Length: 283
Image: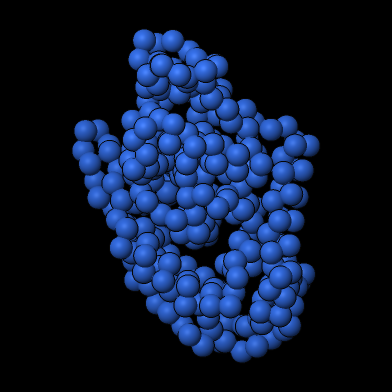
């Protein structure tokens, strides 16, 4: 007989579930989701079972998602619905083989107020990027993005992770700005301050990789120091996998930060229900 797990233990397990994506969805897609919206999309992706050939309807408990991420559960069900509505309005684009394809994340959301759950299906048109992937894919444990607050951090993390096998990659500033949907920061100084620096700080602090970069000028010069008077067109992004001890320490740090937030909401995260919506425990 399988050991009984509390809802909290189940959520702890979910933080180590794998997000697996085709690299095309990471490197060639453009979408503008908030940090929490990205966490929700990737949480749903972790529910895909190996060998699945079609998407199934996935049920998400609002309080579980709040506990997973350390989100204030006071109005979590309302906020959860708003998040789904917002994601539904944000179709995204993937550039494949000189074709630009417009896609959506979710279909058929169903709300159950009594159980505090939402059921939904991933859009069938993104199936090729999430199911049956054999080559050119990236995978990571969900915990890596759960403490992030900048919407650019999960996107830059996934991009860096997809190139980690190479150790470094040269990326056009224009292409990176477009990929991250950060066109508002047209000047490199603003882009660095508002996008690159906070994202890299969170990646290095909360994830299983470390990232740094050097700038490349329009003349192909690699710049490690002062940028004054130089036109920066690319960056060289350096990606290094943390060793086992560092990854373990980072995981503990990330989860401790989330649980510290959850302690602030103790009592609001205590209700647990069975599949019929009946209260079964206080955790």
